[in-house]
Image 1 (cartoon, rainbow, N blue to C red):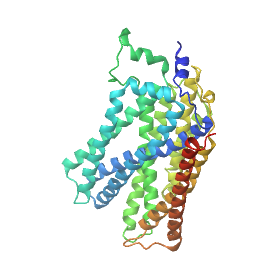
Image 2 (image 1 turned 120 degrees about the horizontal axis):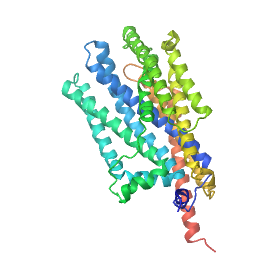
Image 3 (image 1 turned 90 degrees about the horizontal axis):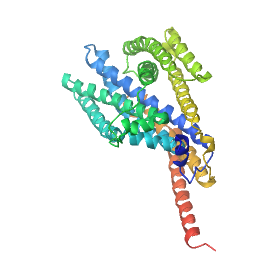
Image 4 (image 1 turned 60 degrees about the vertical axis):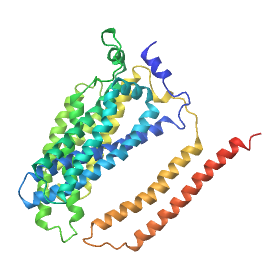
Length: 402
C-alpha cells in the first residue's frame, strides 16, 4: 500500500467537528504564542547567566529580573504549547503518531528532561533571592538552558520527521530489520533548528525595550539603569536579527519550493535588523514586541505552508478530512474562549499590568475591580451552562429517546 493511502487510513474515522481551516488557523496562532515564550525563556535565561558573571550592579539587577522572567516564561510556554499540539493531532494525527513512535524514547525523555531543567532553573531563582548565585549555582542554570535546547531539538525532530513520510519505512526497517526501540532521532535540519533558536537573542532585545518602557514610571528604577538596559538591547537586537537572516537563507536553500510568505519573512528580518540600529528603536516601547510577534507569526505561517506542500505530494490534504459538523461543541468552544478567556484572562492581565507599575502596595482601581466582578459572574454563568448542557445531553440519550 502506498504511503499516501496509509496516511489516509490512519485518519480518525470520526472526522473532525468543524472545517479544517478553522483548526489550521488556530494552530498557527497558538504556535506563535508558544514559540514567543520559548524564545523569551532562552533569551532571558542567557542574559541572566551572563549577567551573574559580571560585577556591575546594573548587570546583577538585570540578571535577577531576567531569572524571574525565564521562570515564568517556562510555565507559559508549557501551557501555550498544549493548544498547537492538540490542533496538530486533529489535522496531522497520522504523521505525528508515526513520528512519535519512531522516536518514542526521546518523546518520553522530553517530559523528564523538562522537569529536570525547570527544577535546575528554580535553583538559580531561589539563590537569586537569597543572595547572588555562586558559580556552582550558575552551572545549574547553564545545564538548564542546555536541556531546554535539547528539548527544543527533540520537538524539532518530531515535527521534521512527520513531514518526511518517504523515509518512514527505512527508519522503521533499516537494512530490512525492524527497529521498534524508538531510540533514534532520524531527521535533523540544522539550518531550520538553528534559525528558530537564533531568534531568541534579538527577541530578548525587543523584550528589554518593552521592559524599560514598562518600569519607566517607577521611582525605584533609576534612569541610569534603564538606559543601561536600552543600550544592551541595542547591542543584542541588530546583530541577532542579522544572524537570524543568514540562517534563514541557509534554511531556504534546502526547502524544495518557495512562496511569497517566505520572502516576506526574510524581508521582515531585514527590516527588523535595520530598524533596531536606529535611535527610534530604544523609544519604541511595546511596538518593539509587536514587531517581534509579527516575525514569529510569519514564521508560524511559513512552517505550516511547508508542511502542507510536502504532504500534498503524497495526496494528503486537510481539505479532504471528513467533517462531521458539531455546531454545539464549536459554539461552546468559542464562547468559552471569548467570554471566559476574555473576562478572566483580561482581568488577570490588567491586574498584573497595573500592579507591576506601582512600587509598594497596590490598591485595585475601580475599573479593574468591576472587571474582576464581571469575570466571576461570567465564570459562574459558564459553569452553569456547561453542566446544563451536559445534563441535557445525558437525559436525551438515556431517558428521552423515542
